[in-house]
Image (cartoon, rainbow, N blue to C red; front, side, top):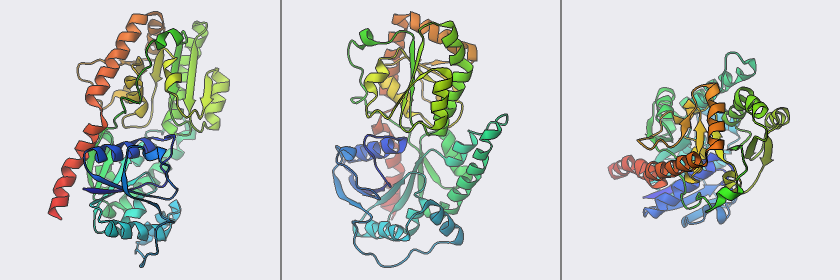
Length: 391
């Protein structure tokens, strides 16, 4: 099959989950013998698509003239304007899908649904990864008025998805929970394609233990992303304040792109070490003894969980992190179900080298067997092959 991917900006270094799963899915589909083309708003560097040979690779501005205007409903037009999607770009994607004879058009990101409204000659896929009504509702905490605005954002995103549902043939998400939300909000066909991880890229450097910082834990991710901010805030308020007071020398490191003012304020208030915008954090992660994933909002499978497991890092996580995971018999991480369990588990792991090593080994064995990009690609291919044959 010929896949035409559309993403506004495919960045390198990969700063977001959308960058990771767009590139990874393209690369895996190409390795399975499928053809890949890519169109984008901004130029895409060779590094950003390393290992992916594109038949066509253009920006919307580089594409030649197109005829015709795509007709939208009033609500579709309002959302197109809301996201700032140029009408010409919608026509360009429709024209490119015909001229380049794409079997499947995959749009990646949140603001991309208007682009599918003109595509008629190919199967139309929205690679949402997360369902956005659920994403925002998960960040509403009744006792925190500052979070109530997320409820309005959820309604806006839900209406947006519903308005463009007729332009989408299939939606790709990363978890069963997101899939249920898509069916409820959009009523469209949905495929669950859990994120994978690049096992060669995320491989622990040998003998790194001699460089690890004692009594250290680490968190990373985009630091302007709501669930990541919620996780850091909860951990600081409910865990780190007491752990730091009771454990002299304890260190909490946070890495990530674009830290918000709230994250910077939390670093000042609770004394964790904030290091922003490193292009490659693998070595820095493995200098820490434990990975903490204290999520209290959001859904889906966290890339950082898979990356930490591939790096053979011991992981302590909240129950939300393991919701929907295929854990099998591996016991790859410790789930802290009570606030007090967080501190107890951290102090125990900091004092037991063998326990940390065994937990990290189980984590890598688990992720290697359960979460590869090959498995994700094969899951989305099965229903597509039947649809392409029927056209």
